[in-house]
Amino acid sequence: MKYVSYNVDNHSIEVYNSITGIETIKVNNEVVSEKFSFFGTDHSLQINNQFYTLKSGIEFFGFSFKVFSNGKPLKLVNLISKKEKNSILLKKIVLVFFGVIIGLTLGNVNVLDTVFALI
Image 1 (tube, helix red, strand yellow):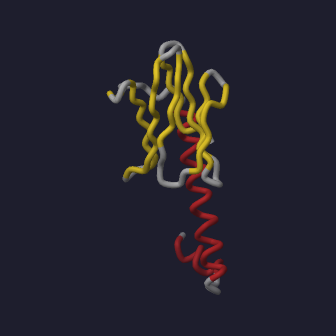
Image 2 (cartoon, rainbow, N blue to C red; image 1 turned 60 degrees about the vertical axis):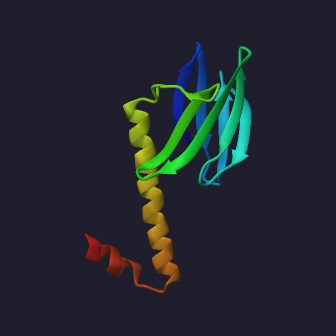
Image 3 (cartoon, rainbow, N blue to C red; image 1 turned 180 degrees about the vertical axis):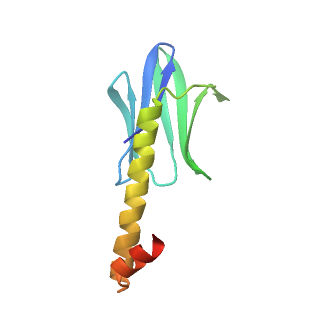
């Protein structure tokens, strides 16, 4: 799932994260870094002889992604559209819902009674 899309010096930087925790960084649609990350990690990138560090992490309301050049944070605008952000939010809600259902099922709780009680 794509989380952010930045434009740095006319180059596209995109961050993807899979449900298995693999974080992928693409520059101009080419994979330049892949790491396992559930709680955040650092990626080193080079674009036009300029070195960048992309730091991912978790904040109170979700994931955070920061790009640094020579140790200084860059102020970048996430280019993902509102429609894509809503799609990400919907996927998160569905995953949490199914996680709750699976947890209740494994805990031998009557799932249908619990779901209807919440409605």
